[in-house]
Image (cartoon, rainbow over all chains, first blue to last red; front, side):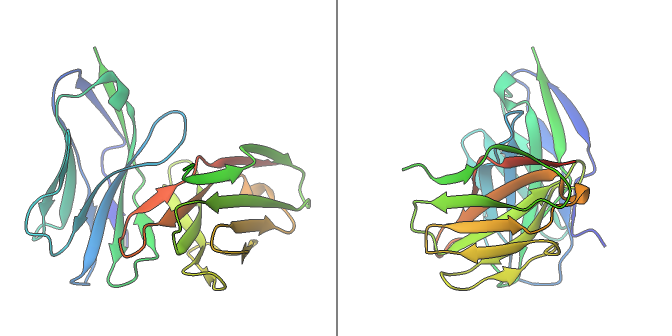
Length: 115
Length: 112
């Protein structure tokens, strides 16, 4: 079974608008971590944001926020005020249990921001 | 402070050839990782090293070997390259006592 599911292969958003990228996960561990990474066309993987399963509040980093709905097992990335430079692939990933050494990645969502 | 560096950036091999991908980090991180990224499949863990002198298999270790030469360096070796190993390879290291992994720029490997 897929541990991390990103159901949107591609998304379009107009510049300055907000966009939500979906991520659902599957784990029976009470302790886990959720991550979002950005991969621009240049290829590098850029860490964006992290949410721990015990964190009470949703994580935020500048224009990025993570909409964490534990009961639904979803960890959607919200990008506010989209910029042309946000056009990239976005990957959701999960660390399960106490094993901090293994990240499981989703298949990614390609976001395109148009003027 | 260069973060995580990888060499080479690009490589073309013939089937059966061997090569070593190099990775180094200057952030004093204990844990280092090798991933491969294939189209439409996200990243998959090949091997990792939780500390100097230790290595463990990840999700897709077959056809690879690794060496944690010292705290800074973690190399990935393909002894007999196969076309199925055509991929982009990423090295990463993890912030000590935190979950977050930081990635190198990647190596694009093509095996003909």
